[in-house]
Structure formats: C-alpha cells, structure tokens
Image (spheres, rainbow, N blue to C red):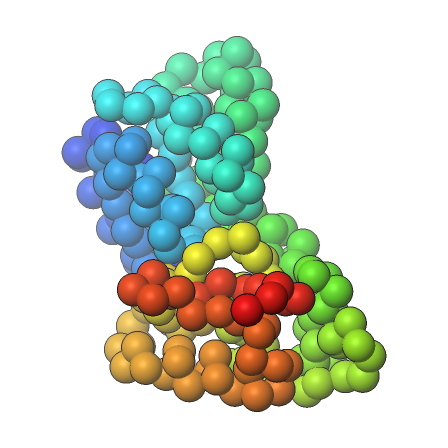
Length: 223
Ligand code: CA
C-alpha cells in the first residue's frame, strides 16, 4: 500500500512518515502543494493525507484540481483548526475524510485503514469501462463482443489499474508502484510483458503505447 503525505510542518511530516511506515505503508512525502498535486497525478496512491494549510498552493486547491481531473484517489484532509467551516470546505472539495489538528496518530492510522478498505471495496466486484467488464470474483474480463477471458492475478491487477483511471496515461513506474508492493524491486520490463499478455488476450488496440510516456487504456479507439 502506497500513500502520499502532503504537509508543510517538518516535524509533523517526519513523525507521520515514521508512524505510517511502521504501520506497513510505503510513504512518499512532500511539503509543497504543487509538487504533491503532480505526484498524485503521476503515481496511483492508495490514499493521500493532505494538509489544507500549505504555503505555496492550498490543500483545497490541490484537492479541487485532482477532482476536476477526475482523479479518484482517497483523501484525508488535515484541518488546522477544527472548525466546521474548514471541514465543510474540505468535504465539498472532494475529501473522503478529515481530521482536525491536533490529533492522535492512532486515530489517523485507523481512519486511513478504514478509508482504504472502503474505497478499495468500491472497486471490488465488478467494474465496467468502455464495454469491458472486469470481475474480481471470477478474475476474468468480459469483452463487449461477448465471451469471458480468464486473467492471471498480475494481468487482473494491471487491467484494474487501467480501468480505474481510463483517461490517464500510466508510466511504467506508476504501474509498477500500483501492482507491486513497494519493497519488491523488479525490472520495469515486466510491465511490457504483462501489457503484451493483455493485448494477446483482448486485442492489441486495448492498450496503446505512448512513446516516452507510458500506456493508456484505449478500448474501441482507432489506430
Ligand atoms: Ca500547514
């Protein structure tokens, strides 16, 4: 599970990172709103902890920009003052949960785990994009032309990443991060291998390679 923490307080961010790593998460951090916004655009995180009061770009703006770009990443916002106005603003901007400072780290971890479970289970079961239906239970995909195509565990995980963010261009690195646990260091070429497996099973037009950028899920697109 990989998470991103965006928090400008240098002491708090180190403390959060240590505690989250001890709880088993792979943790990326940044103290800058703009940088954080870009990081969660390029990497598929399981969740983001987002401070609202940031010096360069406010957490609310970061969150609004993600949601405007249809980035569904689960977000817990940290509000400086536990005022209802800040909480409302956070929720309206698309936050999934919030916590007012100061907070106990145990509460944050509990909320983080619950949030990931809740959002992840949203996608379990069945997901349909571009006429393709992915079934977790059957570990198979049902193409629009009919029939059922069985997938290996890795093919399933990879296709799910594509179908969860169908408009996004996925770099090899972000795909690696999304389908492997962080401590596994594997050759990026394995992504190419699995993408080719999916193309063989579903047709080569299912995933397009964008030179120097990565891959995109393109069901039914020409060329
Ligand atoms: Ca702050």
